[in-house]
Image (cartoon, rainbow, N blue to C red; front, side, top):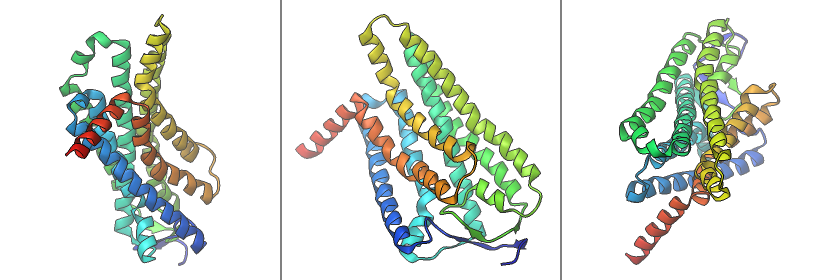
Length: 307
């Protein structure tokens, strides 16, 4: 195609230009995706079926498990389509739709993790008032805000993005359509879109990070103030799973978006870690580092085996 042209479709180059490498990585991604579906579905079933897990912490964990299914589905489905059919062509409408849902789910996950950090902060810093502060109305309100706020934010970005139809090329050197990637390919002046991405990105990424960081400063300060070593260990254990998930996610996001841009290979690798590996690891992190989940899993397995 010539420079500065209208596009009606994009050609996704996928993970690798080498067919053998692309096949092997796609097969691995499919395996990771199936494990992600299975692991997060098990977490959902455990929380829904076991009354011992009907608490605010596991209510938020249910929402996180849903997002850990939705996010890789939105991000990786084009890899699986290419893997099965070999078709790398994606229409402009499908590409922008994927960018919208991927941005929405990613933003919602960050906001939800912030709500979970607030829940852990109240549980550790103000345990006597935990049940009154984190009541069902507050929990539902925080979860609803996590989903709806980022939905509207991404909608505003997409409305601006759709004002542009002139792209420097229709070859997209990635395995998914992302707002940032599409913005970098626009051949018109994108200063308005840049400002909007910066403003809304600050609200959806930096603000959750700041609130989460503040929550853990308060948590650590409270834990250090506990005189008993057993009490300190128990308090830290209650938030260790969430802290591990938050650390993994923000580390990959920082490497992916806030460091000087590297090669397309490194960008794709970080995107794969963020969309395929972390959602797969989350159920294992919460299962292996949480006694309540382990006990509930044993109860469910005993019930089904006995039945």
